[in-house]
Every structure is written in C-alpha cells, then in structure tokens.
Image: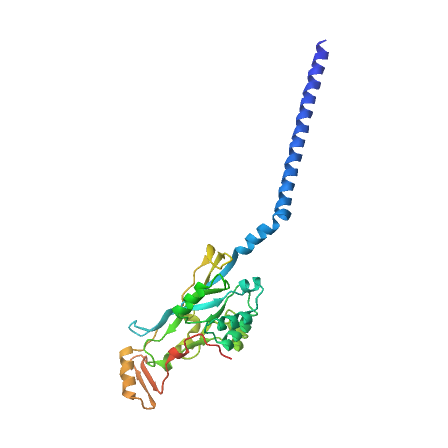
Length: 305
C-alpha cells in the first residue's frame, strides 16, 4: 500500500516537471515569435522610416588645420606668424548623397553671386578626386563676412557648403627680410607624386623659398579633425570624435631685426646686398638684398601647375 502511494507521488512529480518544461518551451516559442515579428517590422514595415532618419543625420569630417610655426629674430621678436581666415569648403560626401555634380554646383553658386574662380576650383576638384570623399575641397579662401553670411543663410538649400577656419601666413614687415624668409604656396601635383611628400594632401601649404623652404618640416604642423553628426540641413547636432592639431615648431634666427632695418635703409632702393656678421662666431646678424618682394602676396593658397 505504501509502495503504491510512493509510486503515485513519483509519477505526479514527473508530470509536474514535464508540464513546467512544456510551459517554458511555449513561453520561449512565444518570445521568439514576438522577436521575429519585431525584426520583421523594423526591417520591412518601418524600413523607409529609419532609412530617412539615417539619411537626415550624416557623419561629416571637418579638418582642423595646424598653425605653421612662427619665425623669430634673435631676441624672440615675431617676424612671421599666422592670422585666422575663413574659407568656404565643399563636402563631397554630402554632394554625392544629393546626386549632384561639383561643376554644376559651382556654376550655380557663381550664378547666385558667390565670387568663385572657376579654373582654381576645377583644379582643386581634380586634385582631390583621388582623395577619400570625406576630405572637403576648399572653394574660396579669405572669404569676406558677407560671403560667410551668404553661405550661412543658405545652408538648408546648400547643406554641402560649410565654413572652415584656416591659418594664413602673415609677414607683418612686408619686404623686410623677404629673401631670407622666403614664402609659402600650395603644393603642386608634381610634388604630391614624389615619395618625400607622401604625407601631404592637395591644398596643403609648403615652403617655396628661404627659411620657409629649408625648415618646412619643422615649421609644418599636423592637422587635426572633428568627426561630427549633421542633419539634413548641414547643421551640426553632435560631435563623435575630436583630434586636436599639433602646431608647427617655432624657429629663432640669428638675425637682429633692428640691424636688418638699418641694412635695408642703407641700400636705399639701390640694387645690391649687405651682410652683417658677428666676427666672434660667424652668425649672420643682417642680410639685406634689393630688389625685394612682399611674401604676403604668395601666402594665400594659390594653385600651382
């Protein structure tokens, strides 16, 4: 009798365990069915909705140009430095997403009254064609406040346009020391093809003569960038990543600015040269030469063939 009772209890326990297992299986089945329905809804039913949302928020890379190092005289007085300027840039990824061609946009912008140099822009677009599309193309340097306001006011119409701050070389003493300092210019296509310039990109500035050329690697910094999220109107809505630029190194010359002025005044506009040396160590204290030129005339990012 007792044995039968124990058997009954054992069977009851087994039945209860089986029922629980079956219930768990049913619950898991319902869960996975619900999950599948949700995935189907997201992937099929609401696909267009989320696609539009993704298209309305794009990731954009905004370069942060590194300032070039300053050039100082022997007493630490600034002979060459940089000044901030504003440039109008074209985001090629945004333009491609809108199915537009760069030259068509340029012609439209010129027709709208924006002063762009067709040939300069064409050369830049051609030079940048081999670069990743997230690198912007500079359409115009030294943009005026009116031109900046024009772009800002039309960002819904032209979300592919943006404003970027760029340092521009400044030679506050004009022709003074011009032959010593040299000047900078936009890197050429021929230079970009050479292995020693493999870390340069189209549009980068490079020393062309004098100290600017000889010490270009020291003076040149390393650009940074910001990776941001922008909406369909091109407005920034968030920052994903930021890498700050590394400024170039400052260089101190043996030149004495006051003595240099005296040497150039002594030339008085006549053709010739004057060199002043320190007899104790051979340091050059002044080096005047005439005729001279103003390096500031070359400091803008001008395309070279």
